[in-house]
Each structure stands twice: as structure tokens, then as C-alpha cells.
Image (tube, rainbow, N blue to C red; front, side):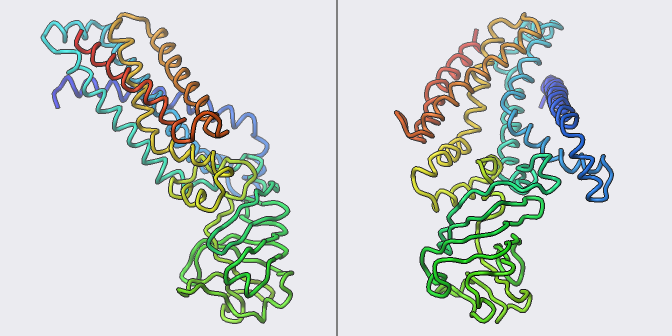
Length: 382
């Protein structure tokens, strides 16, 4: 790495930090001012300071902003660096010294590629760990009930239903579970109801699942034996051989978590690709069409961000003397245009009309990626 490369990368990092901090700070301030009462009540309820509560809530939120805007931030930082080098006549000096445009742009492309890779890693590794917190509105922090989305788990062959959710405590109020077959149907019948169901993570004593408290159906759950699959995987644990359960309680093993049961599709934004694939396996083709579209979006998101970069680079390389505000406008216009086309095709893929879910995501790349690559290569050689 030469001194010029380090200088260009330093400019790139500065612009990136400034842009990210400005956008994130603005969004956080708007959220705080809009929902200040909810944050104050949550801080008082949890016996914590308001500052610590805000840091806890908005730290994952900042990662979401970075993940969502990674493509635009990479393009904006690159264009600003090129415009700044031209404004200070450093671009002219480099070209006069025999340094080609391709050589000048190379460290910016490498940095942008690294930025897109970090965003993809955070999307798969960091955000799923905080999906419970990220899917909460400020109003949810106080424990307000939320509507429940019926969801079928194919492993125990159970349809999860209930009156409502309390996401703050990870509970289902009035769970009404329908059993459609398998060992559970043989042991319990077609219904399992209780006063509430508490989701719990996997421990050494049991896998992840729900502890159903004050079981109403069946009435004699305390006397029933636990239910296992053919390979001795626990499906239902009862107090007969699980002393950690209270009387009139039972434990149902399930890969469904409390956020998957939220009304709406917010949880899908922060679930990992593996969780989305598992969800599709338990749904019909019609019900999971939107999730299939989202899976393809996840897999092709780095290519989509790269396409946005290739569309923006030749615009400024051909006319590097443009004003900074013009650069920002071009960046926003390119991102908005490509996003509009992608969202329009995704809508068609969700509805199943005209295009399939896979084609709706691939089509923007097939249209714009080769064209952007050709235009960028041409701009680097002129």
C-alpha cells in the first residue's frame, strides 16, 4: 500500500464516519423526541438511568442503520472523495504524473467491498442476536400486549395461536395450540391450552421452547408421561420426569420463538437467513412467498450494493468538476431509482403475478449490473 492509497483511504474513512454519524444521530434524536415519555417510564420501571436505557435500546438500532444504508454510504463516500480530490487539484496532479483513474479508484473499490462484506456479516451474525429488541417499538418496552400471528411448527406438528403476546416478558397470553399429528397427537389429542406460555432459551435440561403454565387441556397433564420422538428428542416434558416444572405445567420444545409470533412481518427483517429457510419449510408456498423473496434478497444484497456503486462511479469520473451538493443529489437519485425498481419487482414476486420470487430479485441485477460494469470500465479508461 502506497502513501497515496493511505491518503485516499483516510479521506474515505472520514467521509464515511461523518455521513453515518449524521444520519444515525438525526434518526435517533427524532425517535427520542417522539417517544420520550415511553423511554422515561421504561427507565423508571427497570430502575435504571435514562441514558443507560437509551444506549441499550439504540445500540442495535445503529447497527440496523449501518446495514440498511451500507450501499448508499459506500457510494456517497466514494463520490465525495473523488470530488474532493478534483476540487483540491490532487486528481489532476495524479493524472499528470501518469497515475491512471483505475489505479486511483482501486483502493476505494477495495474499501467499499470491505464495507459491504461487513454489512453482510452484521446482517447474518449480529442482528439476529438482537431481533427481540429490534422488533420492539418504544411502546413495547412498557409491556403492552401485541397481536399474535398464528404460526405452524412442523417439528412437533403444532399450530401456535393465542389471545396476544407480551414481548417484554416473552409470553403468550391464553395459548391455544392445535396439534395435527405425530407423537403429541397420540399422547394429548388435538389441543393444548393453558393460561400463559413463557418462552425460554435452550439449557442443559431442555431445548428452546415454551413453558405452559396452568394447563387447561388436557386436564391431567401432571400425570402424563413426557413425549419423545423416535430418536428420543424431547417434544413435551411433564412434571412426572421434569422436577424443574411446576405442577399443572409442561414444556413444549419448539424452534418458534416469541418474535416469530408477532403480528406482521417485522421479525423477518432481523432474522438470519437460516431462520427464514426454516420458516419456509413449515409454510405453504402461498403463505411463504414473501419470505422466499426476502431470502433471495439476502443472498443477493451484496451484489445489489455493488451494482449501486458501479452505477454511480462513471457519473462522477466523466465529470469530476461537479459541486459537492450535486454529488450528494446524484448519489441519492441513483440509490432511489435502483431501490424503486427493486421494490417494484419484489412486490410482483410477493404477489406471484408475472414473475417468480427468484426472478423478481435477479432481474434488477441482470439489467443493471452488466451495464454498470461496462460504464465504469469505460469511464476508468477515458
